[in-house]
Length: 240
Image (tube, rainbow, N blue to C red; front, side, top):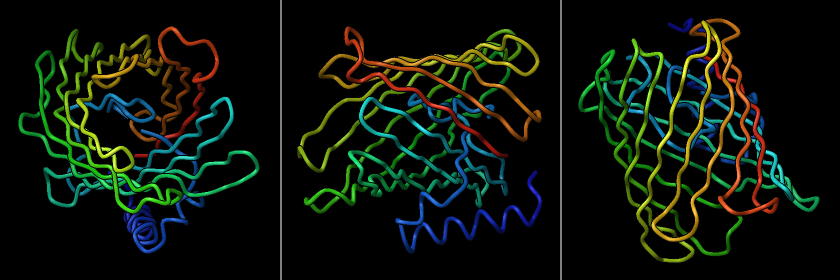
C-alpha cells in the first residue's frame, strides 16, 4: 500500500495531465512490477490493488529520437484500473508531446498461482503533433498463465486497433514472458505486432531495488529481419 501523501501526489499528477498533456515530460521518469509492465507492449491479466496506485515511466532511445514516457495508474473502484499519461519526444532538435494515452482495464478472472487469468483493456491515444484531428483506438484481451509457483509467467494479447491517420483497422497481438532468475531479478521478453508487417521483439532484465516497492528495468528491441533502423533501448523505473 502507498502512503496517503504519495497517493495525493499521483492524483495531482493525473489531474495535471488531464488539464494539460504538455506536462507529461515533467513527471518523474519511472516504470511498471509484478505486472508484465511497461515498457513491454504485451500486457498481463492483472491490475493494481484496489485503492492503490502505481507510477511507471521509462526512456526509450531510438536511432533518431528519444522518448520520455510516464504512465500513472490507479484502481479506485476495486476491479477497474485507470491509466492516464503519455510521451514527450526529442527528434531533430525539436521537443514535443507526441502521445497522450488514456486506458481502462478490468479483470474477469483473477490470476491464480499455477493457474490463469483473463481481462479486457480499452484505450485511446492522441498524437498532438499530427495535423489530423482525432485519436487512435484499441481494445485487447490480456491472458496470463502462471507456472512454477509464479516464477514463470506467460502473457498473451489479442485485440483490435484503429489508426486515426490511416483510417484502417488492424488485428494486434503479443506474446511475452517473465522468468524469475533470483529473488530480485527477472528475465523478460516478448514479440508483438499486427496482422500486416513484420513483428517486433524486445528482451531485458528487471530488478527489484526494494521488493514490491521500487523496480528498475532495461530492454533492447528491434523488428525481425531489420538491422539498425528500428532498434531501440529502454531504461525505466517503477514505483508502487
